[in-house]
Image (cartoon, rainbow, N blue to C red; front, top):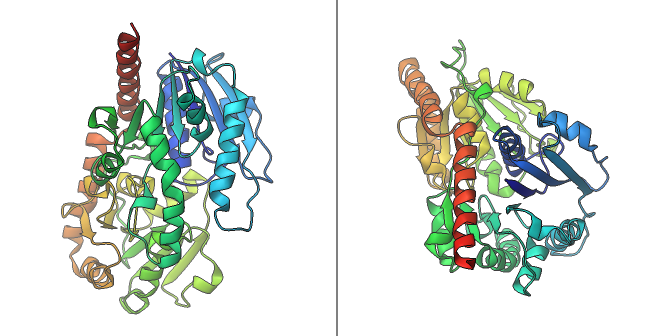
Length: 389
């Protein structure tokens, strides 16, 4: 099968959950014998890796991978710049294979990358079936302030357009599927598939770390990640006798002046990240909006209990067996969950951590996710071929 995978970057060249998902999807498609054309980008001033480097990263068999790399357009200063940059990038993506889109069996698009392509499809250009994946649909979820809400409204129209024009729409299920259906996408065009984790991440048992109870936050300095809510828990963090580890580009002005807080900065090396995770007990993700966060899957795979918000498809990952699920933007619930995680016994905590590992093993291995995705793609192409006949 010939698939074009359109992305807004892959790890480790670009950090983020969508980029890690793209990396794993590409790597496992190649393992399954897919002839893959990968379109990706790096930052506007970063060097574009050559095809041989990307092929080595993805462990691509000879002759099975074609790579087209771009620099993402430079950010502007006026409101709406991200949307304009995303459209410009989607035009670059379209033009890169302008005469070849009908030659693929399937086109898998992440984020806004198929925007320009789907405009041409709407005008009648013949092309392979297009599947769209927007991960968390954060622009349709709760926001922490009025500025974010205004940005969300700006981002919505092209998302609705692409979901309606796509042959299929990939969803993580749960609230994400409800959001997609409200756009007018028929249920039969929605494919519910979870995200996954590579086997190399999954441990057999939680690592037993003695001494202080250690909490962990991994994420960017974004309002929707719930950093401000965590900062308002400074009293609990500083006075509980526990440690709080922070991974991500957290600016100095947002760092708590406390001996209990350890800031690791941005970590791109997966081994270093696993070492930090293994040193902790509880992952805290108080996001206002999410899809199915890779960071939760990674934490669970290494045996962490989880405090998370009831957003997107997170309830498929976290419940009372492996942590605490709280409502987004509820400061009192976050404080209560942190206190409770400090209060429970080592036996109770270990049971939660073991439940995290078991859940990942049962339903979130990348090998199984990729196979399920490929089966869904094959079904889509088969059904469309039958309709054309």
